[in-house]
Image (cartoon, rainbow, N blue to C red; front, top):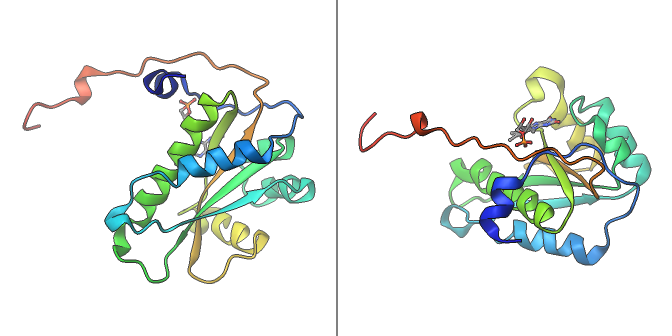
Length: 172
Ligand SMILES: Cc1cc2nc3c(=O)[nH]c(=O)nc-3n(C[C@H](O)[C@H](O)[C@H](O)COP(=O)(O)O)c2cc1C
């Protein structure tokens, strides 16, 4: 799939077939993630690949907007390693760029995926702490986003969100 087509036709997919995603495809997704730009090229990302059925099933209990994990065969937790950062304020942007690359690559490879928010939701409902405990993350490694993936069992239609009123020439 051509890159602009992939960007413009990607939608969140929350229903999946039971079919598993093979390791070669998972590697392609992670390679796309690690191709993202990052501040000072610090690459603070770490990825927890979750395929274990019991682990996926348990996630909605502490991440209520990730209920689709219980019906998926794969989830990827994108974390920022905040220990020893070169550009400390930028780890969220760095890991977000990696997350978006996973979504685009998944779509281009014929998969469906959805970004479920983790950081900074801890104060509201304990999502960060939930993933820290669930995936045994060391101190200083912060879960940013949990992407749920599968072969799509729904096809949300393309949306045109181009809005010329969002664009300002030189000044507001
Ligand atoms: C930071 C962030 C957090 C999100 N969290 C969730 C979530 O917890 N659960 C969910 O189902 N979708 C979540 N989404 C997906 C959005 O709902 C979705 O991207 C948006 O409605 C636009 O739809 P589209 O992805 O189909 O273009 C999140 C997206 C972003 C960027």
